[in-house]
Picture (cartoon, rainbow, N blue to C red):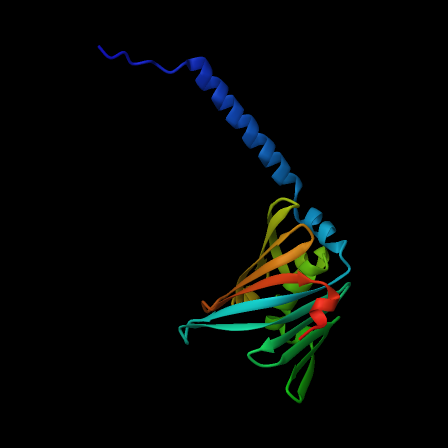
Amino acid sequence: MRITRLPDPAAALRATLLAVLLAGGLAARAAGFDLPALMQQLAQVRSGQAVFVEDRRVQQLDQTLRSSGRLSFTAPDTFVRETLKPSHERMAVVGNQLTMSRGDRTRTALLDSVPEAAVVVEAIRGTLTGNRDTLERYFDATVQGSAEQWQLDLVPREPRLRGQVSHLRITGRRSQVREVRITLADGDSSVMRIEPVTPDAAARP
């Protein structure tokens, strides 16, 4: 005759209590890492350089477009993106001044006069420089993870801007931004993967 052993109620209770305690500890640690904590961590890095590879998904073309190049920033308000492939383009933002170059043509404008571009620039620049005020002015921000590995979700506050850019997700490790995902309202999207480099390495073509 086969004897079925019933579960030990005391053991089951201990396992449940242990699970609750562990979950509570994890939740407490996660709750302690919020937007102010992330911004303070990022603001400790005053400048940086990186290389990037970006894949853009354009629904009308039904294909992925890839570009690559270099990024740099200097606190408090300078951000430069230089695309090297498939063609050379450069975008530099200093304060509220936006300068875009392609070939021998250069165009300068006030960043806030192009709000659809400003919302993306401010998301990336504000995160890189740890500018909490800028992010909270433009976005509803949610932080998940820990100081070691984090995720920042940004949704534009203004309905008009949400009609252009639905959502941005920025992920990183410690004080480094490693990936930027952008979802546009029309369904197009992009993923930029970022690899920090030393200044000497960034200077090489």
